[in-house]
Length: 246
Image (cartoon, rainbow, N blue to C red):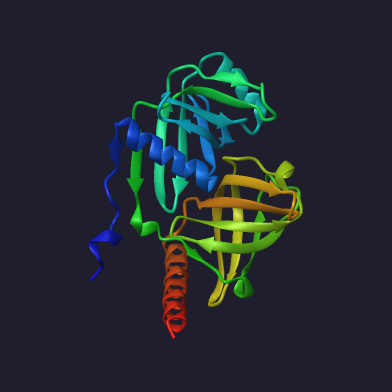
């Protein structure tokens, strides 16, 4: 029998300033990426929470990537914000104007805290991390890429995965784009499915690009492969924790 905690939880709507500020601060401290979508537009933009102040009921978002999303911001177009933290979806709508602040070293957008935040804990999407010695080879290919990109699988859940690529590949990929041919060399065979790019960040200090992918229109057979692999990683992690006790 599954524990009730492992079942998907219904979304909660947070309305108190304390709850809202603490969840946004969690996104800020973990540097979790946000996806911004403007009303009646399909393009997605990436940002981060960079400041939360409950006393003044204020917050700030990092400069958007790509930056041309600012023209919608300046026009006062409402937008939705969505972030994920350890399998929890944290989302809100922004209907009040944000002001562009470039008075400091870093450009950001300042405005009021949202009045409501949707908090959706989806326990069934447990994310399992791979050990560095056992990273799985992956490849991303599709009609929008000039050539396939090879990298490593860092962690995986039933709904998506985090990847690592050598060098800066951020200029050749687009947030929200679906890449038709993602493959991973799992221990019990090759899996292949379309993926949607949800997160992209080049870490200059490491010369590594990190990418977050969501499985797109995944087939039942491939879904079972993924779930089998996640279960295997969970089992190995529990065994490793037991060994650490001695």
